[in-house]
Image (cartoon, rainbow, N blue to C red):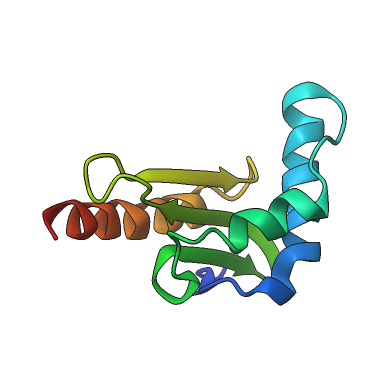
Length: 109
């Protein structure tokens, strides 16, 4: 499998992110429970700069992993959401490395 293509998320990605999260919901709990409004609210979080705090990984044009970072505490506690489809762990690891580095930089600042 070719390496994942990674880019930041935009608000226009909300439908694809909702699909990804619902696919993961079905795997984890047996039913979808993520609505697009919630995804959009996460993407609009006032403590998130999507260009620097979000990551999407695509394999063969399919969204397979997602990471989002936010910091409501001014560096004391930096939160990260990380989602990856089970058969795409390499993309998941790639997405995990970026928010960890960004969280460290935010905490140091």
